[in-house]
Length: 128
Image (cartoon, rainbow, N blue to C red):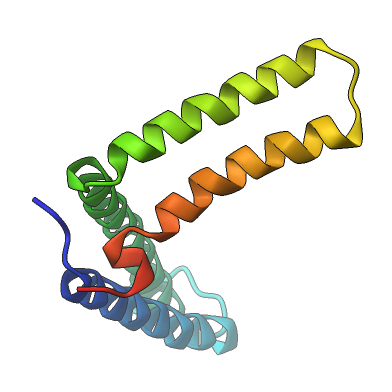
């Protein structure tokens, strides 16, 4: 199933909210005096930071899975695979011969073609 831009938009908004929460919690943590007391502001802020960071990690994995699904189901995947193989083959060929700037530039052209195809995916380019 292709990932729609609106889904990634909600994902990004959630990430932004988590980052905002983390920023506020970190400000409190930095200004609170250190304490081992579990009921202290310091320990509560530290626990909150830990929860937010754990949630951010889980959220990042979900985002990567959404992007992987969108790439796998997209119509450009065959073109991306073909271009990626050509870029790898060119890089391997250059590795085996004398390195000239023209050879390296040619390899960069091939890799740029792969990146351009990735940019054409609807959720990256902004299409819905």
